[in-house]
Image (cartoon, rainbow, N blue to C red; front, side, top):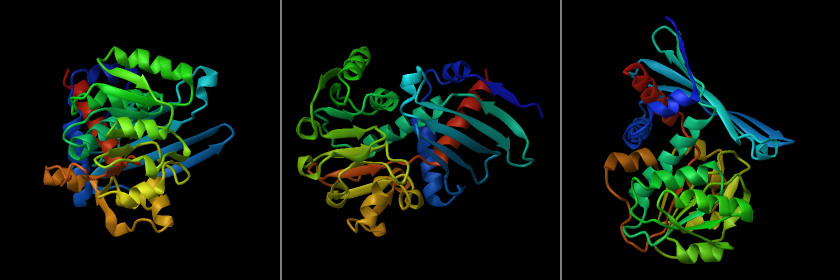
Length: 318
């Protein structure tokens, strides 16, 4: 069996015009049904410079392959003129263990599948009428989250909260080309007052949004907190949420926004609702447009499995 190695350029071309929401939704549903084997996340953490490496792997029962993904995030890579993210995805035959392909995506697929998960959360959790989208952060994920929201949200009005004015201006210039009307805000209060769909995309380890700023009818998707030490939200926000949705209950007991709120006794495990179950019910869970909802995404191997399957099938069917 001859394994193939695909470049980032080949991978990007293979996904042109492809709907990724459906396959990743299927992955989440299979995960929540217990039809997957997904071990705990492998993790390397670095202090100087700060960074982390995640190893996520597993398979869906009945599928003919398994996937191992290695992805890194080093937020200070801009000082070296490098992307903050890097990595590979590797597919093996689940019947023989032989290597089928290596996707040298340089972290691209991890970034995309994270953004797709954010769009899925908005699809099921966002208020019916989104007045403005609030984005916290100015990096790769801040860009991709907004791009993929176009597939599920009609709103094109955006407010952006960041720390660096040059990065904010660069972000506004780039995302304007995708049909968005963007405005800078200076703090959590302004962000929450103007937007009712908020996505946080940073590697912060402190609260960027305060409970007192969040208004009724808001949905927040937090995607940055994928290690035990990271968090972007005031943990009290999770306690005030009418629905607290997580991509993986086992993972969120150990990392991210949910772990912090659990450790403080603000929420309990029984308060958590897994995203795959929300998708499986095929209906929005917002019972009232004034509900506050929160989604905590730590990244699950089924996303990597499904996007790898999609890329592999597209590349081999051309």
